[in-house]
Length: 378
Image 1 (spheres, rainbow, N blue to C red):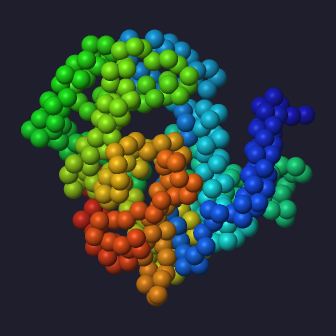
Image 2 (cartoon, rainbow, N blue to C red; image 1 turned 90 degrees about the vertical axis):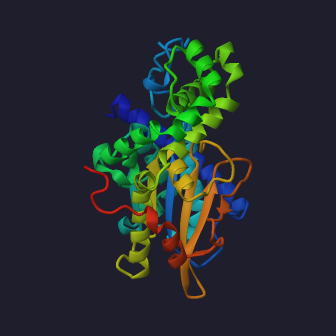
Image 3 (cartoon, rainbow, N blue to C red; image 1 turned 180 degrees about the horizontal axis):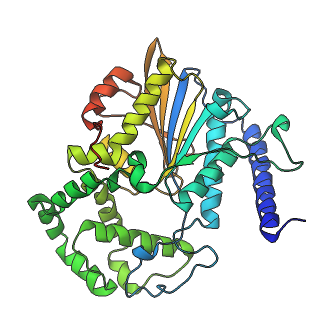
């Protein structure tokens, strides 16, 4: 007999199955308009943000009218139902895009997946994998269950500079130097009136951009949950706080060394995995998945100057670093999906490079941001 937990899990998986079947029928009807048509792709790296979530306790403020709300049974900092739906849809979108490239069957070496060490990113990755690799008939192990297990990896925060570079001891030391620099203090000073207003009404000690960045998540998650924000927020929400939250990515990447740790470790890994594919050291892996946070995306895009307008990457947004071979030349095409009115990911352009950026030129553009061994300080 199934336990209550087991029964709920089966019901959830069956619900996913029904949603997936419906989507596949719609996709077939629309002739899979988001699928890649190019036969030139040889590898893709996918960095995505987790789904919608509840606020962390650290993102709330002393005068918050919802400070003691428990969010039971979800609790703080966890995926909401909307977040689960969003992440599953990301997996389905990736299946639509890469269906021919990946082939229909899950093969262990075909994919390399990793997550940060947070429940919401781990669950998001599981949902993306469920949408990306629904089982074919030959892979089904339970009648009526349109799901199969796909493994992934994660590492403790202090042991993962690829996705947690801002937790490096070296990063923290240099970041603190930036916070005490005349340039940064002048930047903060221009917002002194707004920061004082926020401090007075929220009860927070607002002395740096990061304080407002944290508040952004408290307010945005409460609003998404259906709560009515206090009247005082109308003066600064959403425009001003959105603007300041975006500026935090610039602070995280203010120096070359900060860029190396905030985004360089991930860029370096993508480069190494790409070269292994080209050199046929690893011929099997076709897709690398990284389930992470908006700051991972913000730091990467800020480092590579990919932002087209100031914003915080939304839930389920993703960046695709596709490796193509065109006219005997290997290079990257970079796409960004932020759900801002477009149905397909938008092709981005690196400064000093075309939309198809040859690998050698890409390497020369990012070389200064690739960290040397030992930089993290762990």
